[in-house]
Length: 213
Image (cartoon, rainbow, N blue to C red):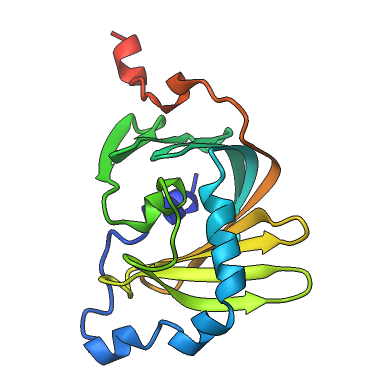
């Protein structure tokens, strides 16, 4: 199993391009005029995302090398997420709000990754705003899709997250992550249900290794 398939949720942890100047870092964000000219649509997206209490969705993931995997995605705002990969991908990722737990069933390895100040938890924040800690690096409004890409303002070269929406009605359908090296991973949501009740136990990690003892 290629574990790069799961890299999209682990972006922004390995700094790259450390030699870039501050001027070069700032240049990745769109001009203020772009934000102002699209203010209505941007605020509409902020209201839509902030209004989603939960998401339950199947997903298909395309890794940078073209490999495919799929699974189930759960999110409960604020802070809770679960990415359950289907076999043969032996990976589970769970967030209870403060950290992401990454578990590899095959290797029986457990990793704890802090969520504070990262793009990993952007969608699960209590209120979504494209300002403050994140800035817009790309905005596109076409007849068939709206795309908005963001990066952390204090770590602009360590990863970007693009959200793609269909319109009328506005619906989140894809996420595209670009890591620090420029490689992209696409996650397509399928059969998504918004606002449905989710068992809180899904966001509690239960270590499989303890059951073997």
